[in-house]
Image 1 (cartoon, rainbow, N blue to C red):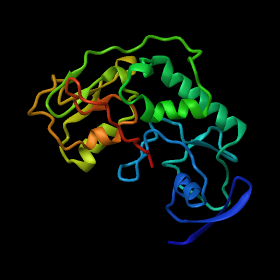
Image 2 (image 1 turned 90 degrees about the horizontal axis):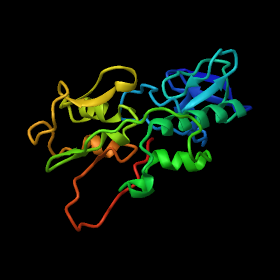
Image 3 (image 1 turned 90 degrees about the vertical axis):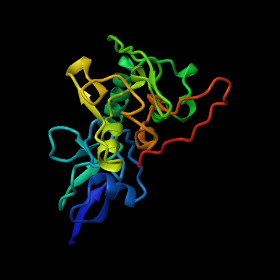
Length: 223
């Protein structure tokens, strides 16, 4: 692969052909936040949290899937970028259930970590919230009320586990993660591979907890 010379946050850098802006930034010690990006999975840019400013571009670009190009001038933390990320987080919380204080994953939730970093409290936007009944079996608990539709679980189910059990159905506000053709969760449909649980950035997918069992959690770092 050939070298690509460009400017990143005011400094000249050299990347490799085929590299994305996100990969280049992390290679140079610059952390760009993400919610839907994982090295092991095909990037989709669903969450848009990783947007950056590229000189000459009409809009902000998702860094996780945008390849670098010669002479690019990129700003990863400009005022415009920071304002956009904060707005995106506020929009996610506008339709999120907001029960962080009683959520098992509250202290290891990537969405809450970003909210703290970008000083997001109560969302200024008002919209309907999605509420769904909790489903579980012996291996997994699904709380779609906490889902932010990042699609990490769908891609992990397809690309890592190779099961193809999870998908996304419907459109707009009614979009949701479904099992097969929107069938109820059963023991046969989803077992203990844990691929989807490991990549969920919120408390939407967890292991069932027995009565009296202490809460445990390991922070999922989206890289």
